Image 1 (cartoon, helix red, strand yellow):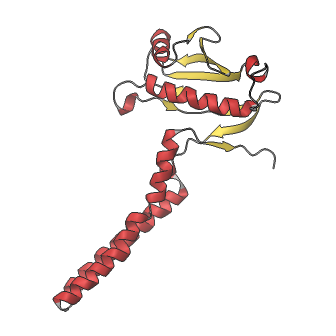
Image 2 (tube, rainbow, N blue to C red; image 1 turned 45 degrees about the vertical axis):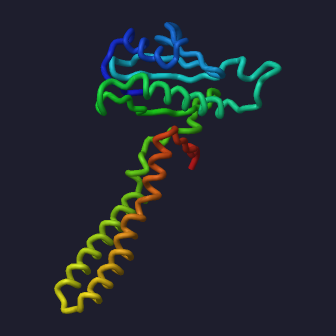
Image 3 (cartoon, rainbow, N blue to C red; image 1 turned 90 degrees about the horizontal axis):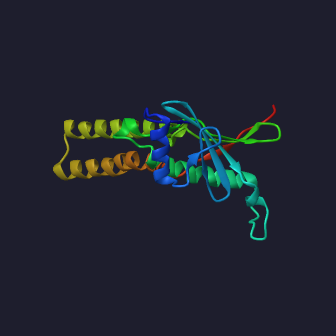
Length: 201
């Protein structure tokens, strides 16, 4: 399900056609044919759009058919679809950006979820919180040690050497700790991230 800026179905279809010119009325409300899949859209409200991605029959048959599983087709097609809709449905500033609220790939035979799109930003993960917390602690400890250096009697050269050592050891560590989190966040923004859904106990 995609949450977007409020607009009627006609305006919504017009915006989708800017990214997918073959989008047309049909299916539930309208549909978008992709290379190996077909996407059916249903306007749940003026600000929520439900979609279903189905593999087409031609994608699994024919002389030029590629040996790609249905799940791989759906993952790839969903990524292409969201990349186009994220730009097409953007209206105005940050508040007008569309949001992929829920996305699940199911097995059609028993309607069980196989994959779910990971909507949690790496910035909000437990590892990120620990990393930012340690960075804050290192920064506070470094500031405290520097203040202590200036409040105790030292020669000018000794004080400069101590302050430089503290800065290199603690402040550089505080800056370096969140770097992997920012890298993961940038990769997470570029494309959809999927995780397997555990079934059973």
